[in-house]
Length: 599
Image (cartoon, rainbow, N blue to C red):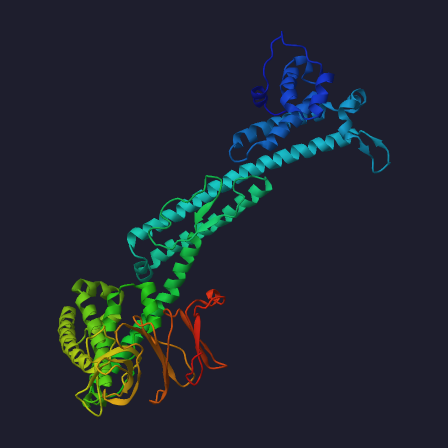
């Protein structure tokens, strides 16, 4: 039989001089049989180095078994070269042992082969058979050869993953150099770019398949390295992610998910981008039609910029000039509609203070937004946008000599409206700050929360504030009474209620709205400087009926208010419920029932 090259064997055997100590195999065998290779291995190498012993069957078998043991312990990733070398040597000795083991060997030295002693399933007799020994050796050789093949395939697959990643990465880098922004790639990709995306997807897919092969082989080989699931790194930031080689050669595989990125990008180009451009054109046609209607004092639902189109711009063309132009048209239409007297009759009634303010505030905000947009658009921006949205830009500027002329006109228009509407808002805001007593319009109530004035009305809360009604409560510092009052759209009082203030000698109040019975409103005022009768709770209806005003004495500012819907009682807590001083005389809470009685 032709054996494998002895070059490998020479590396494993230590040449022992003629003067070496004589080793008796019958003494060495028990050490080897016990797999005490630390002691027995060197002696076995010395024994086989003697030419007289090199063709002895069992020493060759034991050398093969020892090398197999070492072969299986090597790290298949870190020690791959040793795996190949020692595996080949193990096969050499096992194959040689197989040729030397025959019936004569087993009869003469059966004590060396007791591990093969077993029952013959055909005859039922126990013994050692040459065929059993040969079969076990053959199985070991096949296992070693298979493991070597798997180790080689493991390393080849790792190299394939690296190759796939490199190919995909180079093509990806070329795209990032050609298109610095992802949205430009989506909108500007032609046939050549789409072919490149298909190439990236193909290599990304092959890389994933090879990575899975690496993991399966690592598990099969019981390798510590590469047995984890491959980590797929998502390409989220275009031009940043995917630009550098991921971790492949350090015992685990982390690869960029080029397959997913390229597939999603192609899908967007073929479907999403086309739909997006259609949406842009449709909205442009719609807003122009509505703008023409309101210019003719015909009602049209302008609304705000469509959320779905806004999301499309964010995805495909963030900070887009075309998005700005569409919004400029939208704001222009909204402003025209809001200040049209026929479409908003309230503008012709100066007594409707709240309505006037609401209308002018809305138009003023739109004018400021519009002005910000038109001031940010340059002629260069328009030229770039034209390349992306030719149909829209051409139709948009068809009535202007140049694109820049349109921008200049809109800047002037928006600036004028910002100034005019700002003045209108300022005027109506001042009118909206004060409510007049319907019985005596010389008496003014502040419709806003004030810091402590020295005299007059001090408003402490505004529980209701709409264009049609403002409700305020507070203290009349002149007569020492509390008040709650409602003012209509003309800001004349609709109803007024009075109640006793807590501890009126010193004006140091805190107040807030609190829960109460359904169909009513409630608030408290706390005099922080008074010790007696320092807390009042007021309950009233929105129609202007005083349910009750109850004054009590409390030792400190409440931490919470609890309203029981079943008993309709209000509990004023000076401490959190779990910290109430139940075992002392200190007041921990006050209860006010539905009629205003306190206990």
